[in-house]
Length: 381
Length: 204
Image (cartoon, rainbow over all chains, first blue to last red; front, top):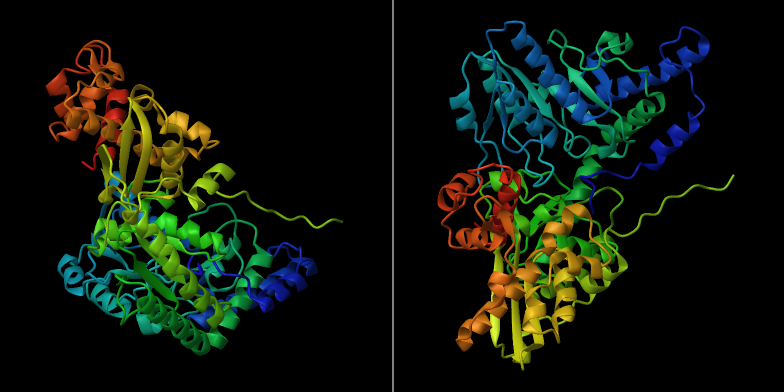
């Protein structure tokens, strides 16, 4: 139940990849072998574009969403270096580390990057964003759905505000793709990042959507692949796998959404009924369908995670101990959650291969584990 | 060709796993354990807190119970500590170190080592508490002190007490109070390391 970390490759994705394992031609070569590989890459580009309502020529394949995110920020940095009068970037406090760390890096180099706050449910406060915006802003970047709490962000509203001030709009849609409909025109996006392995595709491949006419500077220099915008020999097999995953995601979106939400609600109701004193984190009205983040007061997250692991149940935690740092999840703290509750948080993230039985196993095992951890705790409920 | 498959070891050693799954000497409310001394270190905000309770008989730790809000390494290392400390003289118990406990556990991943530093501190706090309640001198405190700033003779125990009382929480405050790192300055890194460690332990 850790599908926000990564997902199992779908059977049809595995099949398409197996079918093409010998398609070893370099997609940049002019001969037949190369052109066959190129046909595979372009088929995949069409599928990925279609999934998010984009044109095929607006999709750049990358190594994943981290690279896509970095490419967008680095493009803006380049524009500022070139003397752009617009020189401020605004993002949020709850972005993925590939943006949070990039922000810290850019700030350290003297660039103007600011983070707009979220409310108690972890949702961007639009009025705060609006107050920060003026015509000096070059980019606004707001993730579509948060990886830890599942909270869906008001991206379309943020995009309208950004555009009113002539800023570009970017969204890291990694967690939302395949779970809720994501359309670049509905959301009003100029840039979008995604990773194949979060929606039943292979690891090491992702994409960046760049609206036609929006600036883009290569992050990886070297070759003429991707129209000279992203060098590196095509990851043919990965790209083809991503294409099939995109096809599947588009086909199954409603079914997938409904199934994940049903399982998630079954889990939430089951745990609320069987474990006293639990706190459900995030915005329950605007939530990715498969994500359930719960804090267990007086129980520490890593212990819970490892006792669940012993039962064959995989989850993740916002506890500091699980990461080797001393600070618990910045996402939960950004929403104003008590530090202890952040240490005691568990994220369940469901996927299409989870069943009612899986959910019921958690509901059967977790109460005993929480009671046990609480009985060892220095703090009594 | 034989199929290549990959299987990982568990995060921790078998000994750690055993102590995590079957922790020894947990302080059960229903047991009616009546301690002679209790010590508590850490804070919930830091993500780990430890309480150790001891019974003392004839200058030796005759029994021990503990509770923790902490991760698997904290649970396993305190469980191991509780077995090691039982039967020890107060002096021996006072000199238990995280390194001794970690070794008995067969090692911990490097980034988890800081999770194992609370058990022995809580044990020492329990011994301090016992001696204070009995109105006895505490001969161990000074003997465990280690000089960190050689020029000014500043010890870890001094730093520990200043942090514990909340009097010095930055390097600058510590330096102004004790004069540490004001001569050759060579110890600055070690001073900061000790400062941060004690800030973590005492939740400052």
